[in-house]
Every structure is written in C-alpha cells, then in structure tokens.
Image (cartoon, rainbow, N blue to C red; front, top):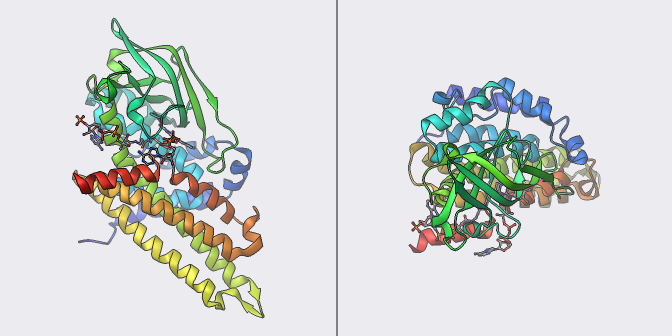
Length: 378
Ligand code: CAA
Ligand code: FAD
C-alpha cells in the first residue's frame, strides 16, 4: 500500500491549488451572485492544462488518470464548487466517448477540445425522469444514415455552451434500457436549443440548462457503441465520474475547516478566542475526521478506476459519504461563525448552498444507496 504522491502528482496538486487561489477564489462570490459562468476561468484552465484532463494522448490530450483528476478536483472545489462543476461536467461529457467510442470517434470528437478552450456535456436526465434514467422519453429514430432526435433534457450542466453533448435517447419507449442509444450532438446542430435554469440555490457559477431537441439530425457515425448500449454506457460513465464528486466534496469540507480554524482564532467571546472552547474544538475535530475518511474513500475508488478493477460500489460509497460529510462540515462552519456565518460576508454560507447539490446530482444519495445495497445483495 502506498500513501505517497509522486513528484508529478504533487506538482499537479500544487498547480491546481495555486490556480484555485489565484484565478477562482477572488471571483467566486461575484459569479455566484451574478449566476454567471466565468468563461475566463475556463480559458485559463485550458492554458495551464487543467481542462479536459481525461482526454487520452491518442486524441491529443494529456490523459490523466482518475487519481490525478481527483487531486485537481479537490483543489478546484476548495476554491468554488460551482466552477468545479463547470470543469468536471466537461470531464463527465467526455467519459462516455471514452467508455463507448472507437479510437476514431475519440480523435474526431475530443481532438478539437485539445486545441482550444471548450466544454463537453452529458445529457441523461429529463423533466419527468432523473433517478429512473432508463425511462427516458427523448427519442432517436433512424432515417437513412442519420439519427433524428426529439425531446427535452433537463438540468444539464454546461448545457448549450458545450461544444459537444452526449445525449441518451430511446429508440422504443416500451423497450426499456435495451432500446437506448448514446449520440454525440454538436453545439451548432440545427433544431438544438437551450434555456438557462435560473435561481439555483448554489453552484451558481455553473450553467445548468434545459435542452430542447426538435428534429435534430446527427450522422450514424455519432453513435457511441451499439444500439441498446446507451443506458449501460451512461451507467459505466457514472460509476467513474461519481469519484470526482466525492473528491470535490472533500475540497468543500477542507475549505469549511480552514475558514472555521481561522475565524475561531480571531473571534473572541467571554474574553478569549472561541477556539478555546471545547465545543468549538470538537466541531473542528469532527470536520478533520470526515475529511480524512472521505479522502481515503475517494482515493480508493479512484485507484480502482485507474487499475481497471470494478469500482461502482466504492464510487457510490465515496460519493454518498463525502457529499453528506461536506454538507455537515459546511453547516458546522456556519455554526462556528455564529451570526456572521449566516450572511454572505464570509464564504461559509456559500459552502452550504453549494454542497447540497452534491447529494442530488450524479445520482441522488438514495440512488447511491440503491447501488450499494444491490452490490451487497447480488
Ligand atoms: N455498469 C454496467 N451495467 C450496468 C450498471 C453499471 N453500473 N448498472 C446497471 N447496469 C446494467 C444491468 O446489468 C442491466 O443489464 P441487463 O439487463 O443486460 O442485465 C441493465 O443495466 C439495467 O440495470 P438495472 O435493472 O439495475 O437498472 P435500473 O433501471 O434498475 O436502474 C439505477 C439502476 C442505478 C437506479 C440507475 O437508473 C441510476 O444510476 N440512476 C441514477 C441516474 C443518475 O445518476 N443520473 C445522473 C445524471 S448526470 C449528473 O447528475 C451530472 C451532473 O450533475 C454534473
Ligand atoms: P427524482 O428522480 O424525481 O427523485 C426525487 C426523490 O425521490 C429523490 O429524493 C430521490 O432520491 C428519490 N427516489 C427516486 N427513486 C428512488 C428509489 N428507487 N429509491 C429511493 N429513493 C428514490 N443530469 C444530467 O443528466 N446531466 C447533468 O449535467 C446534470 N447536471 C445537474 C445540475 C444541477 C444543478 C441539478 C440540480 C441536476 C443535474 N442533473 C444532471 C440532474 C440530476 O442528476 C437529477 O436531478 C438527479 O439524478 C435526480 O433526478 P430528479 O431530479 O428527477 O429526482
């Protein structure tokens, strides 16, 4: 067993840490308030090599493994979970192409994302079905050499702004998951439009959209895997990408702890810093215990992904545990800050708003427990 990061990993972690402190933290509150995606951060991430890091070398990328991707993710989320979601939803959009695409498709679709700053998106959820993903109502009908897509996708991160979107659709609504297909849709496809979803509780620097498909045509060459593979490609993707959500959650918790340590040393009550009170010290200790436990969980799950070993059970455990731990840490950080924690003057109220989404997206934590229990009972 090896708990030491390599020199390259330490450098990568430091690069992401510096990036978060220099490029993200100074503007995070502003873009949260404006509910706007900071495009300049995406461009700078591209320039320093922190965007779309999962694109393999044969497609022109740097091909980082999951452990490396998560090291980056923990640091970015420390700076802002909303901006984490912009960058990581792009990795999510890339992953089905790696899971189900041929080498030629990987070069064709992912190559352009290595040449200039651009995002990918993953469109599975719909207005009427999120958890029950196989019940999708967006249709794909083959017309000659083209797929014709009709329907609506909901809650899509980077939706409409992404250069490419992997869309999951059904060829027969009675056919369940065996009638699903995964299709790559370019941003400029005629009939493809989007509506930005406003007034989110948190992660407001990320773009979330409803996507509308009206007779959108894509060539058969944009189909990933075989007919009927769509649902399984989505599931295999999520088994991997739930790990960065766990790592990002640890980043949120670390920020909650650092802010709490700092404030508790500065704030005085009853003639001494509140850090002197054991009630406050115990909150800090609980946060630290959660962070250490959570990091071990995402590291193990990421290691399994990188080893090519089964990882769905471990990634579900890491995602559920870390997102709940982050929410608790943010909640306790507000408590440590007292009344000042309840307003935007300190970053802790944003941490709570941001962390809530981690319990919902990439599969709710109830669905993670479904996955965990099915593994236990099979
Ligand atoms: N890997 C490979 N195959 C899998 C699989 C996996 N992880 N999970 C299921 N399958 C296969 C099964 O073996 C089965 O295949 P066969 O019929 O050939 O035996 C088939 O898929 C159907 O499996 P289930 O009957 O188990 O499927 P289900 O309909 O009961 O659903 C579920 C299972 C786990 C609940 C699934 O629907 C699920 O994960 N739902 C949550 C969806 C989700 O996570 N959405 C996230 C959207 S992305 C997002 O949120 C991103 C963001 O914010 C940035
Ligand atoms: P529902 O499925 O309607 O669930 C409602 C409640 O019922 C939840 O508590 C759920 O856990 C519970 N429930 C449902 N089924 C079960 C069950 N079998 N057992 C126990 N409890 C159950 N999706 C994408 O495809 N791509 C994205 O990029 C994306 N980004 C998102 C960004 C944001 C900001 C948000 C809010 C969502 C995003 N999503 C995305 C969608 C997200 O994955 C779904 O919201 C999520 O999977 C839940 O689906 P739902 O909202 O339809 O809830």
